[in-house]
Image (cartoon, rainbow, N blue to C red; front, side, top):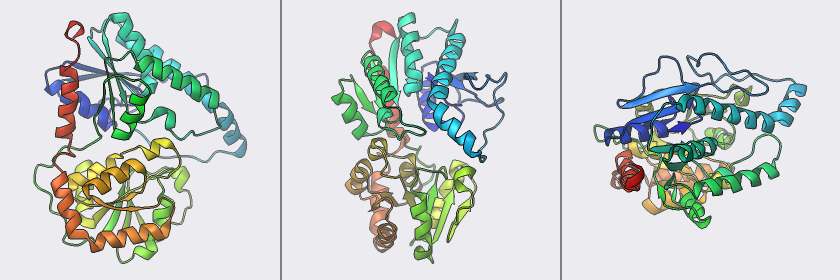
Length: 386
């Protein structure tokens, strides 16, 4: 596997690697800036590369931890970053690819599993060079993402053509939602299988409250999550508590007035489960700002299902398909405070029925179900190259 993340904090990569190892595959992951001393799952080995760019030298050692602390930049520095960000991103990817080539020397493999577009180019190159099969794992609709920094329409077109050309060579393609899979199939990609970002089923059946005591957003507290709508709604939702729990982008948070919302620190998965069950409702938010958001199924949705808790979710096409189709909760219009307040109140009024719907849907919306789909993809890969 090749992925341009630190692996340690990438739940999808870790779950897939562990599932394949449990099925009898030897799995090696090359990641970016993997924390020193971090121990991968049983049966999985990891090496790290630390890419630099034309603006930053590669570090000699991987970081020991990740930080959520941002810092304010002066207006000239913000302008420079805006202008140079595309060049910086291209440079980092090129440096990462060079590091992957170096780490892959002497490593024998039959399948190259490339996670996301940032690993696809070097992954396809190494697979062709070694006569291995290529599996492409598209964690999002890459060409439908929100573009941060200055617009880069030419780069966008180049990336889509490159992604189409390389993905069509793959023996299999994985992605995270049915809407993304439909779009990729329409682009002529072969063998697209949905493996969602679900969570392992809990060891014991969840015990949610009889009635909700609050609403919880569990995830990164940053831009693009429609959290300003949640904050503005918090006073109207009282006496229900409104809690934002997760790593905070301090630059975005700044001096922002949180209203009646509470900010909680990031915590381990099982502790988030406890907080979900304590409050009783999960908020699954996204801004309606790009095509990728419209086809996304955030892992927050599946975390709530694992905890046995209904959701109040942004009314975006793929979320609507899942939430309405299975009765997992209610929907609100992104950016609309009154709509969010009404959706929460409806969820409170219909809480017993929503709890039952979540309970019924939970076995299929679990990692055990999606891991089986992943393992089946590998079982069906052509024998002559496995």
